[in-house]
Image (spheres, rainbow, N blue to C red):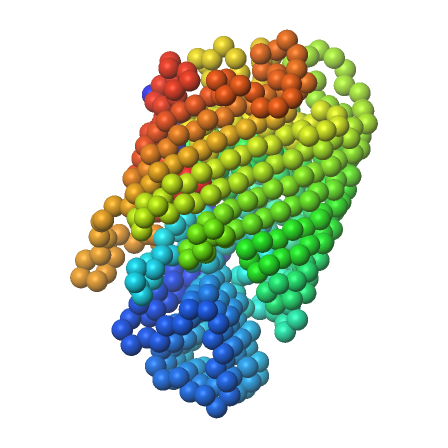
Length: 560
């Protein structure tokens, strides 16, 4: 049996006690906020709440999908879920302030009788009558991220010594970010600045670019909820070639625990500037331009819990050179709009990139001497999802992923694509189709490229799943006896279909001309499993390649 396993364990990237305390507090904030919302006697408001000066509300108040503006008095606890809170001068809160999925702004002369607890991540939920039921939470959604611009992360802060970490991988080990950061919300928007150094822990550790890098950025928001966003960034980082199949947490844990890095990496050194607009946290459109120098990087010697003495899969070859890049990026996320069947339930992440410059292409297995060449390419990518609630406990969810070259010269290796394995066609192992005569997963053909890189100029993937919640109770005497952040069990039946191809049309069976290849050529798989909220356990079997053995897959949270 092939095994594509991602094991759930303690997050390796917890590098500071303060970070652990912050995550623990976030968990208790969610439980407490939902408990107060559902408690008898709580005043529940759906939509905006404005308590004027001189007005008093007795008892606990819970607001869903605010915003909340308080100038008067609330004698109990204020709970705001998926809502920003502004406490004006003279506001009085008798007990605690608990905010889930929002930002707190407080003026001078504000009185709070208890403590302030915030959790930046928004809550996905359903309403069972007046009762709020959390759902669809993923472990990856709770982990603090440095790569989610536009996502509110609580109150203002100034950290002169901030420590964080990114995804564990075979090139960097655990990349640690150290440096100052500054964030201030204002009555006209928000400003955020950070200047972080990157220390890569994979051996050998030296005083060079293999060990040290940097990532500095600023973000200026004009408008409290809607408005313009201006940003800039200067960086010297290691970036993944493809990151859309697996979450960062899954990829990092598979690397650290199983000695299996399911991504390729390359070096990026340069700058970028961005200008965009946003509608709350549901939609954003941005224009990004910059200049980068790309370099190839090699796998190093990071520590792993298993198979530590084995050799790593070679980090795939990459093209080297300097490119000027310009892109348009669109993001839409209305999964929180459970009461809006038409506008709610959508997730779209799309971008179009145009690059031009001089690169030296890696020749791969060909015995030729590479020479620099001028290239100009255009690449598009879209990940679109639709979540459909058929009944209170039943969902039919769809996902379409398509991307690749849409004009110009052939894509650099850093922009090629692949399918197959966890996160795409799960009836196949990661970039392996030994029982297929034609390689439609990586488009490598008969050539033996080191490291099995992604070589497809275009890919297309469709996924569909039917899920039904199970009526299990994880509570005993009112207390949850299994302490995970989210445990909402459901059975899942799913189907995947996808393939990659090269362009233009040649005699190679992996190539195709204009349009979509014949649907009969797509690699397909069927599967079923049990989703426990934080953890999902699945079995998948290839349909298009009967000789392919059954795959056993463990995912963190939902498949998509």
